Image (tube, rainbow, N blue to C red; front, side, top):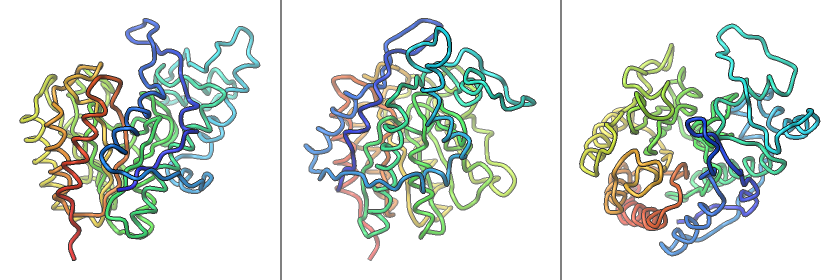
Length: 345
């Protein structure tokens, strides 16, 4: 399997974020990608550079207004009196009835759901490069590869069509799925991250050609709090094409696999032509977010289950933060996936 990654993705290096009101070191650091890339290569993956497709694929899932904001906001922010070094919003409108403001401060609040996505001078280039890794992986699958692994960092599944959140700016899994749709009629996105893929859900919530499913820690007391409940089933044409499986905090391997089996049984009823796996590794028992208790062996079982769908597959890296087991968890997942992934003849 090929792993797609560009060193330009490392240029986004946020210094901090706010957690429960306290300034904390941002865990979404370039070293995550170093650990994951080393593990992928150790597992036998061949590294290839992402191909620059400009904004062609990205603009299919993100609004021009939002992309313009991401491109220019850092420079605009630095022109403010007493501006912080990184763009961090201090206002968050509910957007139910509000207008679109002209000011940099107002637009930051409009386009950034929380304080976990600081924007520096290098952020836009890095997140575009991350999305290019997803697009390149999808193209490899379209060209005949049975599967490809996009080492996307920064991650993407909390990014809405026009809003950043949860360390995510551009929705890499959505980019991959939309590109697969250029050939395949039906695509499923299977999100196994610790956190609900709320941005991905939003992008496809009214569509029936992309089935979005997510297994994650129950948002009743966990990020992203407002999305990820079992009663969120899609809207209009997309009603019945969104499935969430929230798990109790500290659920172990067996509980995760049981929930995943239920989810995958429903995916099989959709009969997708291709799959995108939003591959979060932060469900790990060792992950600093501490939401679920999946072991290294558990990730191998997850990989095996996903491989048994027998579909062309793009693996898109989402969460998974620095711990001693981060690389081991990826290696374990890839072993389980590759040994069991076979496309029908």
